Length: 193
Image (cartoon, rainbow, N blue to C red; front, side, top):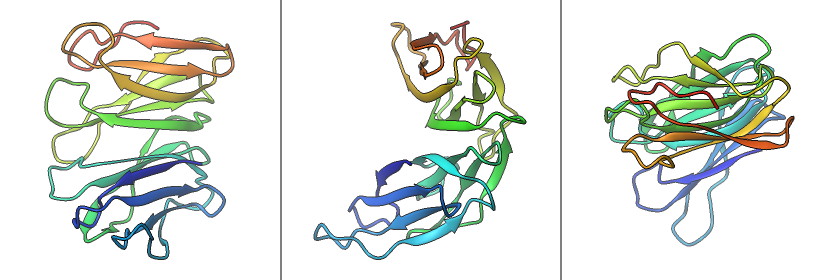
């Protein structure tokens, strides 16, 4: 359902990371350096997880990028820390709430420090969740921001749209046929959509 390109094995060539919702895992296809890719290595996201969205970035100040995935079937976000050379540790899960059905994830600093935080669109509970990085690659409990009754948010993007130094959240609400903007009030706290 989602694909992300990033160099995960340190050879300067972009590799493919893909969510496999039917088999409950993420796949990593390492770049051979000539436009072809090695066979997929898979990393479990848990039985029934149905991963829908993936983002790759360094979340723990290590040398290699890590994988963050939205698991719609098990109502959580999974973080797979890199072991180096394109391999990953078992995922650590962060709950997004019963029935939340997270559909999209974006990872970038929204809290005003150098550490990337997780922003997730929770389609089943009509909200966006923000999980702030603790500075060591772990994340706190999510703070929820409503997107409106029946909104069913399915995609989220984070960028500075408000003209301040802080990054804001833009969300696609499939149930109410609109786009919502949540402005960052600083330190990772957001105004109402």
